[in-house]
Image (cartoon, rainbow, N blue to C red):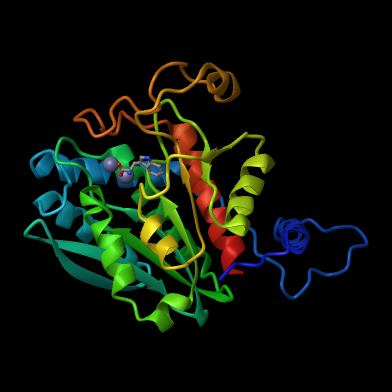
Length: 316
Ligand code: DTR
Ligand code: ZN
Ligand code: ZN
């Protein structure tokens, strides 16, 4: 089911509400329409980085990783869950088995909104066994967590019901997200009007890629980056490569953001985005050096803000 966001209405409403929210007023303008979209807040990148520091500490205290079936993964989930419980979310831990070990998904529902129209945002929380997995995928997990906390701080009351998810065992083949989708009734699956995926959004030699799946979701992300003057490219290698795939296979509109993995940045991309041509977007992909030093703060900041913008826009 496609999301239908008449861009001009949403944009007008956003302009109206932003001006009004900022204490300004649009001289002579009509009052903001009832459906004015509250402006998404800036996501403090310092908060996102603080979550990454926690995940790094968890890996360090648990054999150097946060991989499926290891102590570091469950400790990561417990950390995220505690923050969400304290912020008023209704959390659920879903268990499954993969490679003979227990896996866990964390689902966080924000109370309110139309239960028949669910907007989801998610990321995989597990890493590989060879390192702490801070860009892959602490970056996505921390940004989704901070956006959820921003929803709580704002006490957002969107039209749609908001649900956030942190997946287990993505590195074993999208096991956790596939378990979630396959264990939803078809009726409940049909209620999910969009799934937004964030897997590697802070790569050191960052590119700015938008998934080219659902047109309305893709446009929402592109509109954000256009608004901050950052060019984007469509993500071409993503199909099947992350947790949006099981949702897409089930007919759910999907989208997401990505800053690149082991593929090398081209000279043209370096000219557009900065960084180093002919060097991987993330030289520490699936390596022990994927630590808190392996993050591009500007990319993490921009993608965290784009995440919040899309959640606010697409849930309104
Ligand atoms: N599969 C992800 C990394 C990854 C590689 N290509 C893409 C494209 C779109 C999203 C993610 C990815 C992982 O290793 O976790
Ligand atoms: Zn990975
Ligand atoms: Zn990943």
